[in-house]
Length: 160
Image (cartoon, helix red, strand yellow):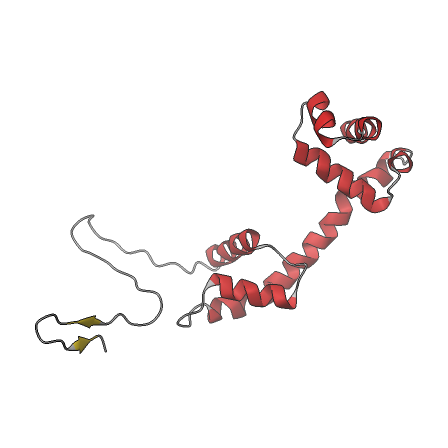
């Protein structure tokens, strides 16, 4: 808590994220994040600094913790449906994410969505190991619609 108090008090004196980060030799993003969380409680940081360690800890750590838990539980409740939907032709992670964000605007961003989706796949052990000697066999996995090709001699369309 002493370090957090030092960040907030230094920011209160300087009023600048960059100055605080330089003086304390920490990331600007770290300063921004602690200031954002503290200002969520009160715009007057001196009031936040007057709080005891337990109250300050709840403001800094618990507020986002509950929100993250809620987002994760919502995500996990839809995960099986999304994994089933991703098996369909033409469905991508981005399309599933866009639908998710339409239903939950405060949900995960795309990169976090994909990371949690990847973890869900790993937990369910949805992989297939293919044993082969490198260079011996060519394996191609096409996602989406079947590929069609035209015979250059006859002009006939193949691919069904």
